[in-house]
Amino acid sequence: MRFQPDATSMKWIQKNFLGLSSLAAVLLTGCQSSPLTPSAGPARDAKTDGFTFAITSDMREFTSPKHPGPQYFEGACAALKAVGVGDFMVSPGDIDPIPPVRSTLDRIIGTNYLWYPVIGNHEAETPADLDWLRAWGQGSIPGLIRRGPANCVATCYSFDHGCAHFVMINQYCDGQSEHGTQGDILEPVHNWLANDLAANRQPVVFVVGHEPIVCVPDMDTGRVRHKGNALDADPATAKRFLDLLRQFRVTAYLTSHTHNASVTNLGGVWQVDSGHARGLGDPGAPSTFLKMNVARDGSRVDVYRADATGTNYALRKSVALR
Image (cartoon, rainbow, N blue to C red; front, side):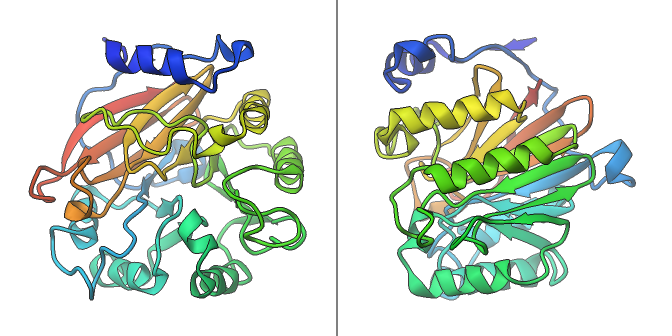
């Protein structure tokens, strides 16, 4: 059957999406809903047959040793392991403090599990987090294609995996420092991203950044956070960013920041908000992790959410990104 947004969400997006008449056509469109079955494990040949990867975000401060146990990020990791961790994990920001997140992954999933972090607003404002991200970004990034623009070399990067290209962007980079602006995509990052996408030859493309183009209500609770305080704070650059993603046929923009999970088609580019993976750390929306199933002929995102106890993650929705 065809998946349609509920009437409240549809009216809200139509009313609030950037407030630009030129974007009137960039509204939710229908999408195919896949059967609610668990995602498959890693593909044997990622290049030809596809692969899966996980997405978690905004688990900040709800990790061991401060918040141990299954009701917090540890529980999300254990639930992910039970359904298959995929080839790697992507985290679109607000992962501080970073070492406890990495140690939780090491302990529950494995020390060899690949993790691709992205800078969020809390990392941008925390020197220790920036030091960690710089050290990681200056190291040997698996599948690396290109490092970032001047003065943000270590906090923007792109890589290939299988049939997909991934671009991780720093929305706080102003060309002078890694934290010189608040949630925007200024010329240095925009131009670097444009050049990277123009050089890409992979059929599937994901761009990953912390703040959404438009803050969509949570898919279950309807909560809205950060409206007018994400990329939509500067409608002109937000529109330019979306136009760039559409120009290069980006499959999906993976984001977070709102703590609200949603999957939204913005005129041909899917915005996938991974919500939060902090368990009971935010009772306003269920704790969430995503699994992305990637294939040349179409990808699918599976949304797993906890219950009111912060545990018992279950598959709530599958959306085909076509």
